Length: 311
Image (cartoon, rainbow, N blue to C red):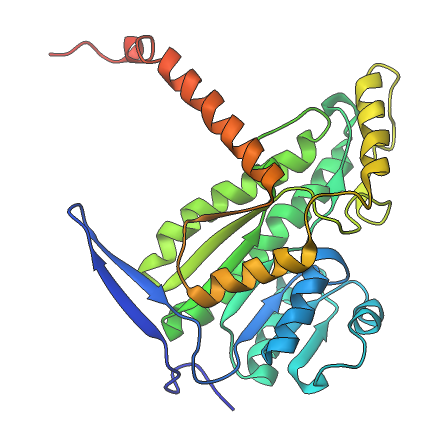
């Protein structure tokens, strides 16, 4: 059984620039099956990811609220010794720590961490209750932080690894009705940007995945929460909610291709910090960049007005 530091082949490529020396670490193992820790695997992109990883021959620790649902969805066409289903409350730091420890012990190490757990929430800001805010951020931020806090020592000490934080195009731009979901994903993106810079010298790569609408169960009652106390003051958001529920089954994104793209990025070991998935995601991102550019240019003269006068 492989253990950190046992001599696994990890290719290291050193690139020099005129500004600084940057190490690009291709840390995906080449001499053994990789070990993945994936959260949120009961359905959707997470479930598809687990299926493809097992088909590759990799080893997967899969956190899920329902191991029975996961196993039923995967069927019988895989080696069960390569799968470790874990029922974990990601909000519980100690439980997450035990899960990561069990992963390294039973699967022989840890190479890739995929933070995928999450759910949608569609409501106006005014309609969103305190408990709903805390529940969302517990999953989207606190849960991710717990996983990272448990996994990073393993990756750092072995000198390599890959962290994939599954955000959303709504972690880059915001639209009415999705304020709470956007708040969680914007926080995840800020965390991920800082993390990428912090762990680069340890040989650990970070990727932020920004999917658009994928044809999963995300727009069903199992994954899309609604406000406990909606009001009559936001008819446009009620109409948007209905339109999203009717969109189910007609989303542009193919989860098979989406999961394959994520795996491909990790195996390649290189690429930009953000991985956009879907033509709709790309369109939203391009519009955001243009809006931000216009804002920055408009502030070019007024921004310096708050500086201390030059000596």
